[in-house]
Amino acid sequence: MIETDLGLTVHARPDWVKCGRCAELVYGKRFARDLQVCPDCGDHARLTARQRLDQLLDPGSETPLTAGPTPHDPLEFVDSRPYAERLAQARAATGMDEAVLCARGTVHDRPVVVAAMDFRFLGGSLGCAVGALVTEAANESLRSRTPLLLVTASGGARMQEGVLSLMQMAKTAHALAELHEAGVLVVSLITDPTYGGVAASFATLADVILIEPGARLGFAGPRVIEHTIRERLPTGFQTAEFLLEHGMVDAITPRPALRATIRHLLAAGDAREVRPEEAPGEPTTQPPAPGPAANASTANGAADQGDPWEAVRLARHPARPTALDYAGRILDDFHELHGDRIGADCPAVIGGIGRLDDVPVMLIGHHKGGDNLAERQHRKFGMATPAGFRKAARLMRLAAKLGLPVITLVDTPGANPGPDAERDGQAVAIAENLRLMSRLPTPIVTVITGEGGSGGALALAVADRVMIGEHGVYSVISPEGCAAILWKDAAAAPAAAAALRMRPRELLRLGVVDRIVPEPPGGAHTDPGKAAALLRAALIPVVHELRALDQTRLLRERGDRFRGFGVAPAARVEGSA
Image (cartoon, rainbow, N blue to C red):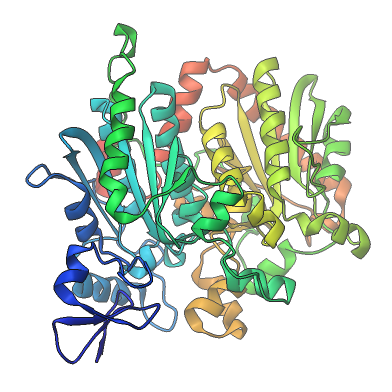
């Protein structure tokens, strides 16, 4: 027998296939005729992106879509093997350039733009090239007013591209926000598995979410959750059936019914008449790329000196000022506001209205709880639940209504990985914040005050300006998590910390942050009052600068900022000429 990369076993006789779930032998031609669904147990075998397009689109209707160049290996990342070597192997094994295929085509003669992911290519991970392709598919949908179909299969963001892969979540969410505003239908087809940064961005931002039987969808994977709670998860957790029961998807759609279901949805999308003022837009295809700000502070050259792992430990120091500490010191007349208005008030996120240099602002931040263990536990160590992200979203909408600038303070290991958070829709809550912030019609300034961990950090960090404390860090994944996955050894966390390029100067070079905010000697925890004064001095001119911009320019420049992440240097120069 031969084990395939799709989880199937080809029997010694090549015309027979062994089901990956029930182990029954299935005649190969029948298996293909049944769209690779086992006739005995109904298991839906994984498909390649090429097979997806062939099954879903009308024969002869496909026109491939491509995107501009992206960085090949932006961090020059090496774990147990160089990233460049892993990429070359994935391309040779799959015959694909990247983990997604995009095309225009038709389904029952109705036009559609499709982006289909392939799990075989580095676990379908979301890197700069995948982000560029999905964004181009969304741009094509916007230009042509054609519905967009997203077929997802992914383990999450691509660690080897560091924080730039994290930015692809914001980039794709912005693209889908433009489709939402334009009234263009977006449909997601969730296939097994869909996790992490893909689940918490474009996969769950669709108007209609279909899912194949048995497919799994979530932000944190089962092993991460079980490691956190030290117990086994119930059978069926995060599966299609579980998600439908908890209101996270619209329908479980067996593979043979997909084309008919999609045709029905596309027909509904055709019903909306396009008004003259809603003529197809021309999204920016090659935006100016983010780069180091000309006036960026380098904190007297102190940032990024020394050991990267020590930098991570310093960013996590329990005595660093909390969001409430900063709120009380940098704002006048701060009043905290509570609750998501659905039924919860997550203590890991705080927010409220105060005055900065006599300007009313909305401050929102992660709150770790300081150096008191009981308080840190109460605050969930700054790891927000869906209620925390929904509270933040409610306060942002209020800020937009009142015309208040939004200041977000980010200090979190990541989003809460517990089973209750998954049950309540963690991925959806993060994705919706990304979309909301990408088009919020008021200035947004983010400061990474300590630890900026993964999607939980990004959910408060889609901003017009992003600053970071001199001893802060920002990454797609924790060094410990990266080491466990790529090095297969959590003890390799120091090496992962260096490879992830997560310190302020490195982030400034990548254009992910605009300014480094100085801290007192030894770190913000050594003199919280001084740290707050330095932060206040950094915030005031930025808030005044952004308030002077008209709304059209503000939103255009914010969109250009995130569209530019992951654009290759040659394309940057060409696009900004």
